[in-house]
Image (cartoon, rainbow, N blue to C red; front, side, top):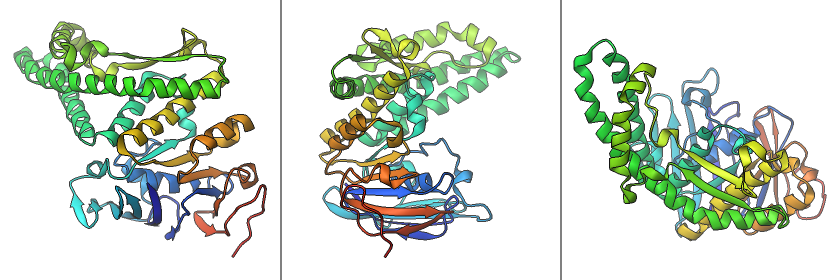
Length: 375
């Protein structure tokens, strides 16, 4: 899996342009707030997922512009392919010249793993980020999963709206059965797929955390929501729990049970990582999750995903940097940083300087701490 060419116009703060990355390590460097992450975000969207920064579509279009366009030539599934995403009016997504019904329909063709500062909160923050991690990973492995997830969330939103109306119109209560049936059917399938994914992820996570902690600690994962998996009677259990929660849910105006409230629980040496892990342990656990995600992707697709590392290497000590980089040797990697000398020692590659949204490509880098020489 590799990106051969990325072209962009009207995208974030970037000046219209293009880059042609090398097959190995690509360093994108520059001062803060120059647009480095925007390049990684553009590549990430071709996985079919939403922005890893949680940005809305309007935020992706440059100020003063009505539309944005990104196109990417890439190698995947044994052949050259091309994707194009247009935002604004009209919004379009094309894969090899064929229009897709949505950007999400492109999932499963181009695969990448992103690690950004926000992912350092995977362990210590609330469950929403951990659910998003599971859903994003599953969306690349099983393209239909994103459609299932969208169906589930639409049903939850409809039930929530009905719950608020039922307080004033009790005759609407029987309609709750309709939405609860949809929530139970799609929700139990979501829980089942999340559980199966965690089963695949667990041995990889344990191995990576063992390496990052030098074998001093053990990490374990558990899905809080396993009772709803479809292959274990979860459909009827979720339907029953939704019915039992109607009174409280009507009072609150929201749906309080289901996969949208579930969590991925992490324990380090048998203690909940969210409550008891140190900052260093939390960072290692988050890194282990992302490396394990890449390993599972590689195993199931037969191709190594592109690695997008957004301003995180500088926060790691040299030993952990080396461990991560050794694990992604042979991959195409994009690394953003402020000072390139901190990561030039790692491998051969290319360097791109970002200044106020304009990219300048420099000569190949190949030696430890070698300076970037402009063409």
